[in-house]
Length: 184
Image (cartoon, rainbow, N blue to C red; front, side, top):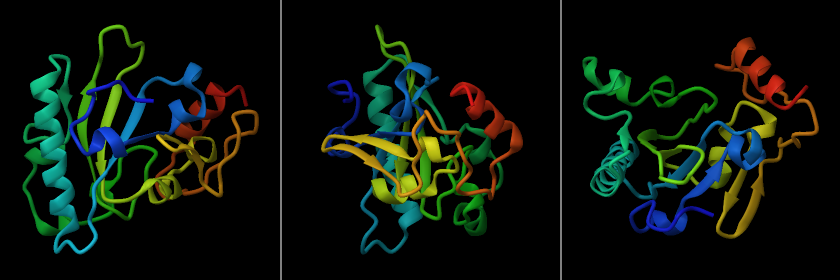
């Protein structure tokens, strides 16, 4: 499912692909790889995800010359003044298409030699079901795991018209783009 040695342990065993690539690899623009971080019995889940995101980013930086870091110290989200409120809100843990009530941090992007699409590596304080339930578009609410395919209860095939499940941040332009991708 994922290239060997793309991620450090234990994420090399627990990560999953979810979103557009899982829905239809032939039409995807990238591959979103989700690394679930255990936040059960942790005092600060956001700090735990941040720490693991940093661990993953350091490993990727050490192993791949093509790694481009996201959400790191030099990214726009990190160079603005830090505050507890900004670090612990849903809005700060949201990026296009994913509306999580759980901590999320992008480690970055890896482009592998011979691979046609870049891998977007994401640390998240939730499991596959929690991630899928956060997706905004029905067509993308599907994941490829080591144990097989997992679909959210709202998932629809690429043969059906994509619908919005979580409207909170989904724009008309995003929905139009996805409908056009699937010919709907």
